[in-house]
Length: 300
Image (tube, rainbow, N blue to C red; front, side, top):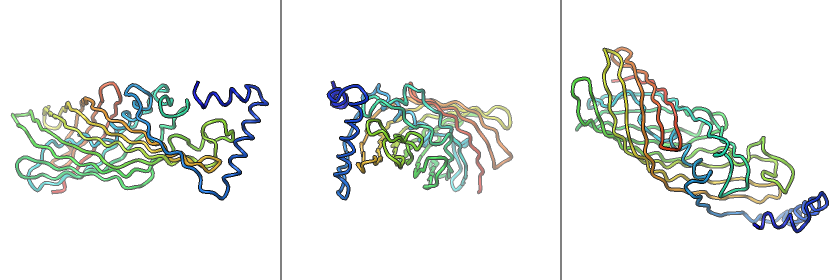
């Protein structure tokens, strides 16, 4: 029996035991008033099949700087600005339940249903194209991101309507939000999770690095089909930031490292000579999926 379950058992299972244990916690909390609280800092490395690990991987796909632009290559000196809207689906209830690293409780994973991201692409010599994106710390729903995306791609060949490119990408930064203890989960029972008055300020860092092989097939004058396969190396990090009603800070760290296959399929439509819009569905083997809507405009 774990220590967390053994103590309530020793104090009794009825209402009397519950009140005695609550009084004990209250007394300990009183003794710490005016003192620096003992922060609970630990590192958890969940098993690859656990709910925590699956949750770490789930958000790495929509937050990752994967391919989204209709443009697969640009002439040297050409510049494209774009806006991407990536859906951030809710994982299933089983994935949202803590398993290896926390008490058995649900996590607040619905911080924002969509991730808006600006993109800038620049054509370089040697059939290269560079992409960059930065999401400043502007709160969208309950999520506050600070994400940098970088990519470098090279056109492999263009044979008639068929084009292919190889793309390397990286995503660094984080997203802050109340995941472990949202305001709606706060309560005043010291024996239960989320005992306190202020929601948690947790941080998730996706740390995605990958390679993608992209193909595009022109269909008629304005339409194009796109597909791609890739591999993503994930080093996600999650940092808890919850201070309970006694002033004790839970600063648990959750770490993982995974490599997953990715796939994508989409279509885009040209809007004149400079513009284009597109939709691209992406998936990560066994873990996550997202849909990206993009609009781009070539400024030069």
